[in-house]
Image 1 (cartoon, each protein chain N blue to C red):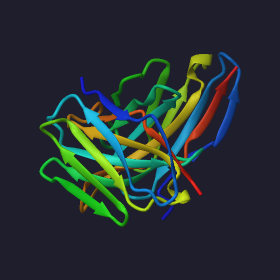
Image 2: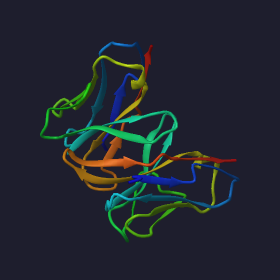
Image 3: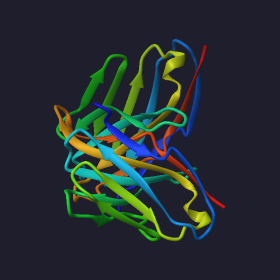
Length: 113
Length: 114
């Protein structure tokens, strides 16, 4: 059964810093890996999706990488801003329909002004 | 284009009461999902529907029933609510984008069972 772990569980950094959020998964046979953002009291918003054949995806100040062989993905946030404060979740999709998407528990990020 | 909508936003129930959580999407997606999110447990799949007329159990289906009424709507019913069902419930639908199959989430329903 796929397990997804996110480290650290919480992170607080000053505005302007570059930072890295980590996601690891136990079963490397994934179709894709997705990063989401969740604001307090809100649903999840998809940020980046990396297919298993890809190494990275970029959107603005966000860059997500995928290393299937080591079971790891990272989300890099450049020049962090207070508006980036949120919980970031990664989810690995292993196919098979109903149980195919496994979420990590998230990293709670606070960017200090 | 509202995306995924859920009603109600908040609900308080007494143990043993029943209720239905409603979900609708306007993106013409085939697949829809119900998750619950609890502190320290992350998101867990309750039920899934790959298309109209089909439903499948997820990780934590006990105590819940679902109905895929049509392509747009997917409802979750609690027949006899229990305090253990206090949670935040999210509905999602999925569709193919340029990057692959992506899930779109509703804003959630916060349920308290006393």
